[in-house]
Amino acid sequence: MQEYLRKVNYYETDKMGIVHHSNYIRWFEEARLDFMEKYGYPYDKFEESGCICPVVSVSCKYKRPIVFGQAVKITVRLKEYKNAKHKFAYTVIDSKTGELHATGESSHCFLNDKGRVVALKKINPEMFEFFEKIANEDSIKTEGEI
Image 1: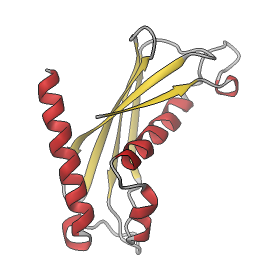
Image 2: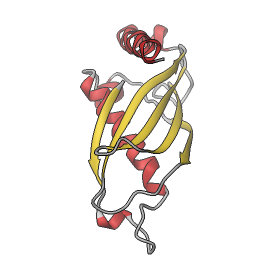
Image 3: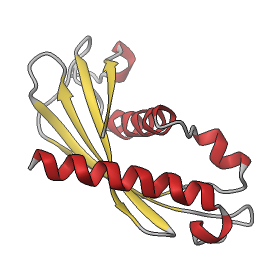
Image 4: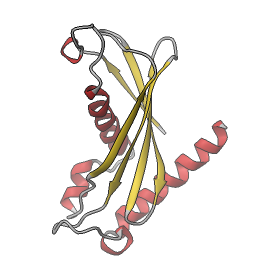
């Protein structure tokens, strides 16, 4: 599990002064890319290998509003991993109070340069091992938190 810190920008708020719901999905992507980079496998490395990981689905449950200037901590963990697909889980927490503001998930698959779903182990063993490593580390941390 990794944490991504972020301060809310004014342009991300709506007329009511709260963060517009669409921004949470953007934050999930920012946090996910940061997560991959912190693990030493930035997304451009995926693309260079001829493999991409498009979003298949994404969801967000909003618990409390977030406002301009508020700092949030977005935690990311690899929730599920199979050879051709994976799922990340997110929590958005106030960095000062620890209050939960949102939770979410995004599902992804692996595609080759022709846009076909592929088994990662066959086309990119190094990337397969990378995801295995993250899955093992995240499952150990998750079990320890329960």
